[in-house]
Image 1: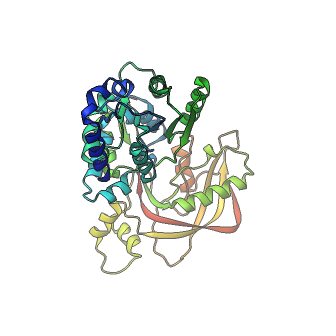
Image 2 (image 1 turned 90 degrees about the horizontal axis):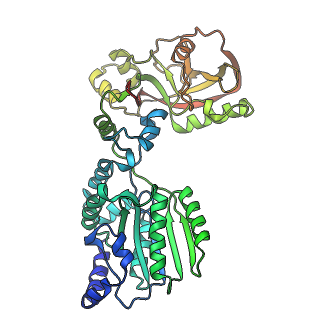
Image 3 (image 1 turned 45 degrees about the vertical axis):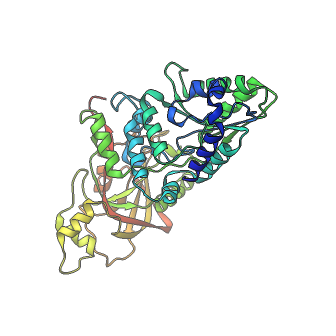
Length: 435
């Protein structure tokens, strides 16, 4: 992003003599700008014909989002819209974005940094907007100025993201929502530049926001062209362990807890999709997909919150080879190394509870390689999973894998379905007792 510096220097030298006069104009840029060191006012005699507005999170920058695999549905909803994290939600707690910024800045090579943390296509568009003397280019985010202003100013300067005329964060008391705040900025910009304005374009990753922008543009009318451009959202997750640690520290042990640990053979994403697709067709689409098992489905090898014996973990990991290093195998198992891959054939589908929305679905599987060493507390290999609607019955799941649930109807498949699994363990963070 170094080439933006030359642009800033060029524009700065050209406008240095008229900076005082320029300050008497472009009042809207000065009013809404949140980072004084990043404000770049166009020269006084500029005829602003275009306004280009760029959203930040997941449009321009690959901001982290909660990793859905780490959380139960109730906790995930609280992270997005509650006050669990120091009285804030994910998007209003600066620590997550700051952690991402630090990871980005730790990369010395700027091209690598841009490729891994920024949406290069949108970055290039923003640069082009800034380089056009008749275009005002704005970074506009709904993140609160009082929480994120200094972080944005410091980080954008440090990584040379200086190709905006103004960097605008949500100011206190302006609107009850991000949409109200952004449209207030638009109105101010339009009022100032309407005499010469020919185009107003906004780039945003949220389709709901894009539709609201289109409605807003239709309402205000005007002789200039308006465009709300949808951008495919992109994000870069935080380190798995780091994210969980931060959530636990911010929320506190009374508000967040781990679910009982599952140990066994976990289906990979493609096998999970294939099995769900078959199940949906098997029931002729009579049931909502929310009653089906969510990712990851797995074949339990022991009871919930139990761990296989250390020697059995090692024998499974090495396929019962001689001279086993048990500690090395345990370390791989505990670190969730997915390299211990085992294939199964699903040969039967089972279901019970035919009442509306209450069906429970299971599968019987057999190892593809009969000579492959496996261990389980149970007589059968049963594929189970948590339901999308979170209405699980742990006692029912236990009875099914133990073979003690007589109400399950089993149907043999005409053709087995091959699934790929890895041997490991899994748990999620859930709401604690106080929530």
